[in-house]
Image (tube, rainbow, N blue to C red; front, side, top):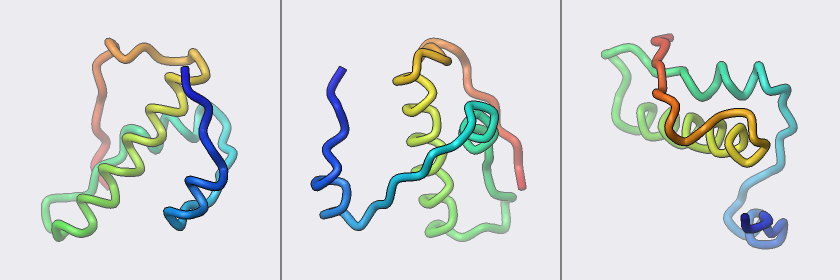
Length: 72
């Protein structure tokens, strides 16, 4: 598995966020309601992806486990 490069992420304008596994799991399942615009849906998609990737990297979830969505 490849380590995250801090300089690369900072260059993309990203910041590190440390979450409990429970919080990362909750974020990996969020999805906006149907009235959300495409920009908001894109933001949710990125947050879900990164949260699930963090859980996978920590060995807490398999990439083969089905995802669930929870509308907000």
